[in-house]
Length: 330
Image (cartoon, rainbow, N blue to C red):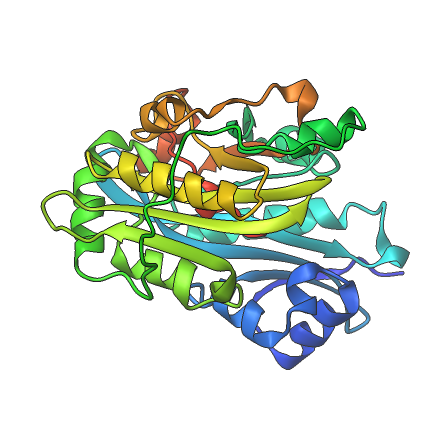
């Protein structure tokens, strides 16, 4: 058998067919989901072929990234697949190294992502990524039912004093979205640029848009946004706080949405936020607490690999801003 041929490619019909055959979740969602995820990247895939057949794929989402007071280009590793007959031959590592070289040669500043337990040893070992540990989970209990079921008690009651203020959801982010980012950016040293274009693309233009609820304070002088998604998962009804960003107007939005979620029977709210993030104090004041690693239902690791001098601070502690908007699966 000859060694597989590795190439960097745009989306094609052949790649789409391989996505469908691979069983990867994005492929199951159809071509629109794949095109939406990778639309900002003209060549998002490292592809391995053996005798002309696709036997491996690695996909990378391209985005604008904040590095201190500057912005650059980052590639987030999200999808990897190697056909069963070719596993154990180092193809996953070859794909990653090929895209690593492509990112550097095409002017990219950073490669980063959230490897699971299976992929983490390769990313942090063979591929030289810096490990930031697990993502910064916060949890807020909203109803007792989740815990009472564990104890086989037929009880359920609210665990939050937050009250729904009957806020109307929004259908798009206006110019105030850029004002929001301008206000937040000085306190974010490394993170995806969350301007108007990104927020609209991520929350309103994708295949999961109908599953998000977004409320906002669209005041250019004190803007704020809170986005959530409900799901039946981890043995209960939970809500992901996709984003909670803003100034003085953020806390009332967070509290209203927590009250609304509790009234709908949502039992737990989850968020991602580091202690140095600009929204951390607001989330802690609302009752969110760090979720100990031993209690987490899944392990999501977080790593980065700078490709330019601009992004070297991405490996430093205390630099990153993350939220669930950075997750490509929620």
